[in-house]
Amino acid sequence: MSVFFLDECHLLWGDVCGYIWGKSNRRIEVPIVNERQRQTYYGALDYFNHEFLTQAYPIANSEHTISFLDYLQAQRPHQRIAVIWDGASYHRSQEVKDYLQSLNAEHEQQFWQLVCVRFAPNAPEQNPVEDVWLQAKRFLREFYHLCDSFCFVKLLFELVTHGRTFNFPKLFEYAVFPRPT
Image 1 (tube, rainbow, N blue to C red):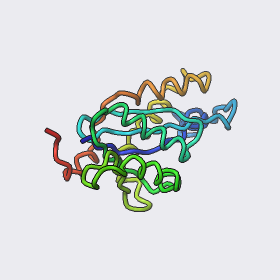
Image 2 (spheres, helix red, strand yellow; image 1 turned 135 degrees about the vertical axis):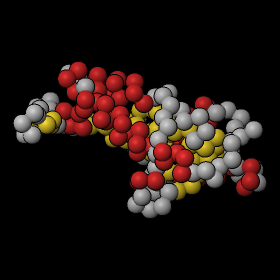
Image 3 (cartoon, rainbow, N blue to C red; image 1 turned 120 degrees about the horizontal axis):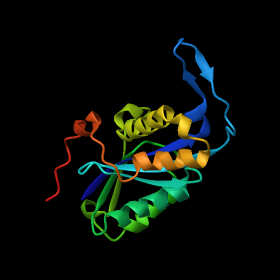
Image 4 (cartoon, one colour; image 1 turned 180 degrees about the vertical axis):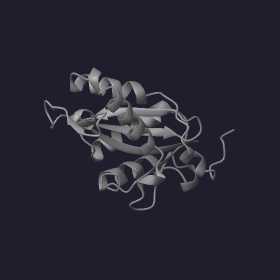
């Protein structure tokens, strides 16, 4: 069995180049070419090996949520998967419920292929994926001077997230999952 923490990130051009603090403790404005440029990422942190998997999508919605769940299954073929995520409306949508029903219909509950569990409502601090997003955005802000286009911002963001391993303290708060044998 694989266990993933899952979340979405909406990367905006303004996340990187909005402002910086100068040596005189004054906020320095940095011109933003296009504030509307954005990229949505779905990300999943593997509880056992701490690998982070990402996929880019135009927006977060039910269709892309299902696509990302398919992607996770392709990354862990022949394994059952548990996903722990927040209560976003597209996670709870009828389309996602129907997808899970069709995927698990022929199995008893204890052998479902994909199980989704929600964090407590309004508690992003419980999700270690939030720490991955924060670290990636912090990296982008540190190297904002390299980011002359939003295309390069996305490239850097993907470089510091996808396929990397992370060992945030939050990961060790969930000692209820037995290590697979």
